[in-house]
Image (cartoon, rainbow, N blue to C red; front, side, top):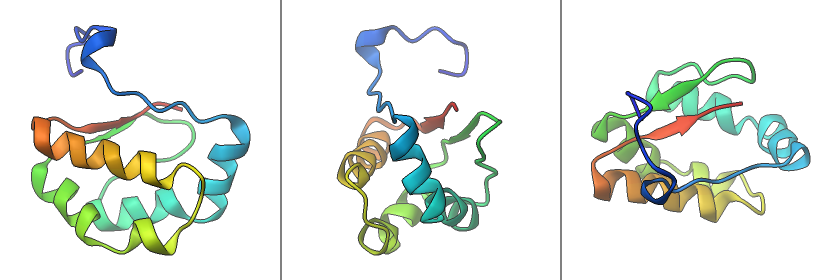
Length: 93
C-alpha cells in the first residue's frame, strides 16, 4: 500500500456509500479512532493506521460495541486482519 503496488487480490476493501459514511461520521466513529490511535482521519484526507500497537489498542477498546452501524462488524474484521497480516488499515475518502 505504501508504494501503491498492491494488487486487488491482495487487498481487503470495504466501500461505504454516502449514507453509511455519514452514519459513522455522525456517530463520531472516526473521531474516536483519531483519539485512540492518535491519527487524523477526516473526510478530505487520506490516513492509515499501520502500527500494530495502535491497531490492537483500537480492537481492545469498546468502539465496536458502543458505536453501532450495519458496517461495524466488517470494519472490525479489517482491523483484525490487519493485525494478523502485519499490515494496516487505510482510509481514502
